[in-house]
Image (cartoon, rainbow, N blue to C red):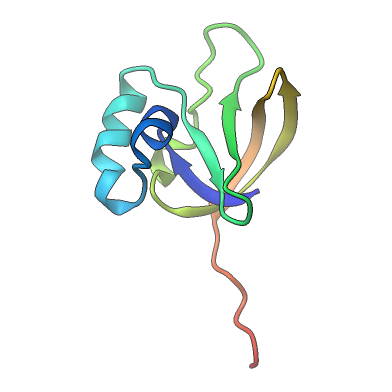
Amino acid sequence: IIGEIVDPACWIVNGAKGESHKECAIACAKAGQTLAILEKKTGKLFYSLSDKPGEDSNKGLVDYIAQTVLVKGKVFTRGGAVGIKVTSVEPYTAPKTGE
């Protein structure tokens, strides 16, 4: 998934994302809010999931809030909700065309 790490509550309610919302999203994540990946191509929101109850599903994501990233993992869908168990996350830069 190529997208932006966001606070899903602020994104759904206010459309908040990007650099202007970064500090708020970090504070919310530190307070326990589960982060999500907003897919760039489709606008679909993927909630970050963990394997075990009580495990931090934001592990590895907080450092990338408000950045475009490439996230890999296993996607799950149930009842209209979509989540991903993240196996890797890294900064993403689109390939240059025409060179």
